[in-house]
Length: 149
Image (cartoon, rainbow, N blue to C red; front, side, top):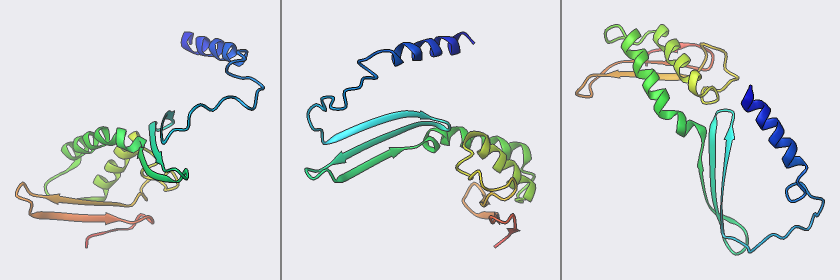
């Protein structure tokens, strides 16, 4: 609560600072740059954008580090924990797919797409032995239909 009050007071001060919120529409732009970096905190995590432009201001390189990149390690660890807890033997079950989906949505709901109802996130899960031999495979499509192919 204290942090929220501090943030509100700081916002009020910033809104009254003419150097930040001025009426001068022709503020100096500074020297033209060929690259720019932007970082913003978004609902799913930090977004980092890095762009380069040529002499015609055409984008020649764009490097985006999106929230999914930052969430990837946590999702992988959550899926590993799901496998340890819910994988029984060497068979992929629909229940296992559901637990994997919950683990992914916990860290990055947009990766599985918020428009998909629970149990309808398209997934492919393959179990392989230590030597790489496939043991089982199951897919689920966007309609929630599971199949082994």
